[in-house]
Image (tube, rainbow, N blue to C red; front, side):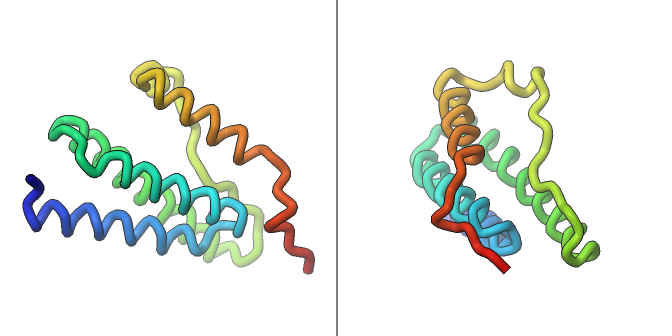
Length: 120
């Protein structure tokens, strides 16, 4: 059973990521929010070793996104690219299910989504 300190740490990370997503373009925000919710729910009862890896990766994501959001705020309207390059080395450590999820995420991210198309 998870300790209250661990639960608090997980919730804090989860909430911080969702707050950072508010600064993304609306289509990325919607996609990111759903992905984060699904992943945190999926790992709710994960084994201890898997939880360590999960938290490390999501903390890295939070740090990267926070840096990119701050850079975007400084540029004020300038072109900012969100995300990070996924190296082959890192990809080799993925399980088959994770590669499938990544592929699905890529398809969704590259799909034209007129639902969120906002014109100035």
